[in-house]
Image 1 (tube, rainbow, N blue to C red):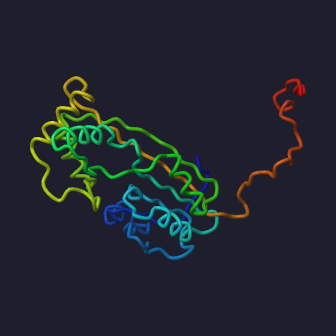
Image 2 (image 1 turned 135 degrees about the vertical axis):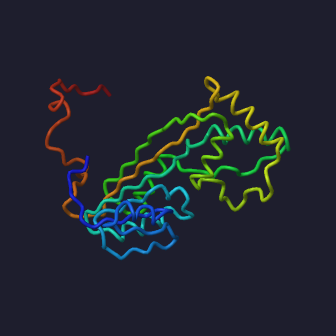
Length: 231
């Protein structure tokens, strides 16, 4: 929990107009390669469900840090690596059976540990990365794919197939999906939400102690006896 009030907020999103209508007092900008944000202009930046699409996520994080005032907070929410693993596996198995090959059909997404490390690379203090896996039930794999299209989360990879997916491949993928991930006549899909938080460095923030500078022994803190190890 953050016990702090924020006055100037920026929101980065693929749908800035939607966020601007919801938060008219905020500065809402598109998730362009170069963010349209002034340096040290905000004490809170929300990067809303767009970072997993970034060609240069570290660059996005660095630009966000520069747009924060000292002790400003970045809160980023994005999709993580477990997202749509059921669909990814089903399409891969079906394509291998039908055509004997494999095409990039679902964009790769970062793992929570790696994404947390990106905050450190971008210069944020007190970085934290959390994962929230969500299971969503659909009537069929086709209904899932229609929902992804409506969300704007379809395949945008430059190496994706340029022709329409054949009926045989789609039919086989649906069969595999329903058999492997079906439940009571429906199918499940995983969406992993990654929540990243990091602070713009400031002298007022807590810092780790220098190794060897402790004044209290661990045994004393635990209320137990300390014994030396034998050589």
